[in-house]
Amino acid sequence: MSQTTKRALAASLKKLLTKNTLDKITVIDIVEDCEVNRQTFYYHFQDIYDLIDWLFINEASEAMNGMKTSDTWKQGFLRMFEWTLENKSLVINVYHSISREKMERFLNEVTFNLLIGVIDEKAVGLPVREEDKKFIADVYKFAFVGILLEWIRLGMKENPHKIMDRFSNLMDGVFERALDKFRADRPV
Image (cartoon, rainbow, N blue to C red; front, side):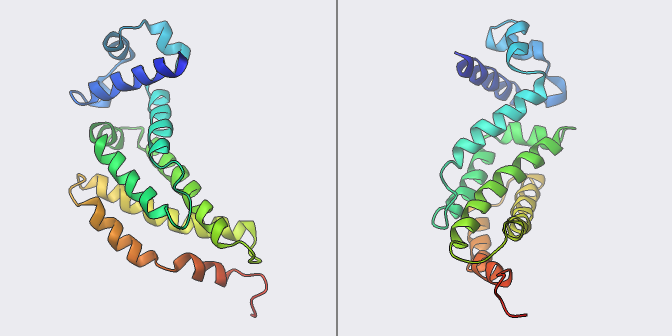
């Protein structure tokens, strides 16, 4: 029941965002649309931003679920673009609000988790320190999130498939080369 209520509140927020900006939506608007009382909202969330966090974490993470391998990471990134486009009103409103840092933090976290899975897979049997693998994931995380945020800022007009084709071409073999540079047994 708890997840059902959370999903209903999230659906109401997304519906309201098609008509208003985030700063014009209140908890009262959400609960009236969802036909629950304010206590129900506050039982599940501290405020609207907490609801946004939950929505991002659950929906976007589900969209990329299981795509943390060297064979699927490109589909995971493409799915992130598609989810963003499917939820354009929500994303644009959050991007242009004071809670933009929440979206950036979320995108960085989800992207890092996807990339570290790929890097761990590629590093099997290689003497690469954990901190170096995290550094590699961070570098490419910032590249991807930067591209995604710029796409959002420009109104999500460019075809996500074209962006991912270019990004994929750029990334071809990059994980292997990066891991090789951080091998502990590499001659200096």
